[in-house]
Length: 363
Image (cartoon, rainbow, N blue to C red; front, side, top):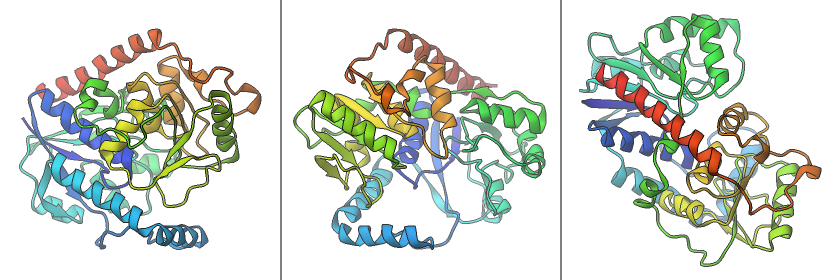
């Protein structure tokens, strides 16, 4: 079967790798797939932020100071997309363009990532609900999309009701999304795993590249820096005696205890850094996912905005205690973790998630 994937795949390492994972799983199931090159805004790709505000002015200042490395990261990401993604031959900028020139596929999958997050641009948001596809033209499948927030307005529920009711095969990534859909439509969406967790460590090792750090280390990947997270990193470093290696997604790095900061990691090295870490500190969902994939001891603090998906995942696999927000609860033995029960739960969730995909595609 030919499948078109509509998702975010430009934003950060997590977005790139979840798109790669879904494409890989579809291939393992005997399908061919292409990632629909839908660009919401016509603008030249740049390493600099185009948003306004003082915070972004500061961020762009740090980007300028580290321009060479940040530019190299950008080029490596583009190279990854070119070599490892099957991208649609046509680039689309609007819902109208998609309707006019529908990609030649048998089924469309929207998801994963926060593609259903409320937006002020309804027309562009509709695209991620596949409303440009008529049922007679192709199957419509939602695989693990996320709203990115735990509650939405009644107006938004009214907006999504007809869109979701037109998707026969429906799943989401977290319980809050399941609840939003139930309240809006009365339907029960199946909760499935993020695509990155559908691949095993052996699968990921086939594309990973070895890290440039040839010694034991604590890996830090943080998307929203807060004082409690820095306190956690400091505690883990002091307790383990290991150097701290930071993958810096933005050019701005605020981890004061970093021994090595990597600004230019390729997606392959990103995966390799997690595979070889002795411990991980992260508040990123995908940072946690790659810790689980590699059975690595990890610790996280709650994300200040989007923590529901991470909390749901940890609760599902019995590791809620790995998220700490109080210095008094910081771990005495950061390098210890028991994965015996977690692996059973994760394998079961992986099987159920892949079964959902199989049934949706073969029905």
